Image (cartoon, rainbow, N blue to C red; front, side):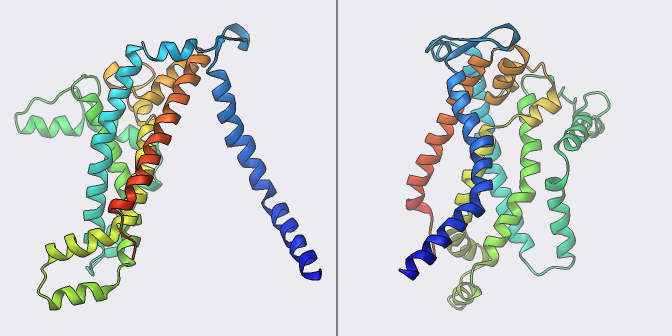
Length: 294
């Protein structure tokens, strides 16, 4: 009986201690989710008034060519930025996992973009991409190659943003992969060396398989982040973007804050939430086939 009373008291105090966090989650995360879902069935007018319109916003989603273009742009962004960012991060982490002089300096340099404000990064890259005064076009000019209008040309604008996104993601991913590499026992490499395995064989047969839990984590978080790309597009291109660079979240921002059509913007947010949930669920199911845990 005493044991039960003590246990009950422990449970009570445990819930009291986590209560502030639970309240914060409910107020700042769960409530906006339900509210957005409700607003997706409404049409907004002047002075913040809205009326119930049923499935009208969702019917509009299926005929909106602008949304289809935004989905296409976001897909291109994901297909290029996520795998290239992960591959470069793994290679960099492997290099920085070696015993070389000035290792801490290299790690700090590669991690700098992570602790730098995105606005500052966007400003620097806007100057680099500037078609008249930018460094990139200046170097291309020295080689007699005409530089494009990086951020205003339909053919190069999205690619330019993807390059910046990859450059920014490498530092944080590299740190995660580095911690994963340091968790691999050296005995595996010693045994492989005795069997005559070379560096490439060790990398493909030991490093990559034992790093798959870390790769899986980075892949899931990167995909979610890539679906929500907005900041670099907004800061590098501005409010008025070309259709070739418009992402799903940017389209949400456009309808929600520029056109004051919060009902349709909410339906875009619900669509994006559903897509991310489905992709994450598929990843969780498929990971059993390729992720190896020691």
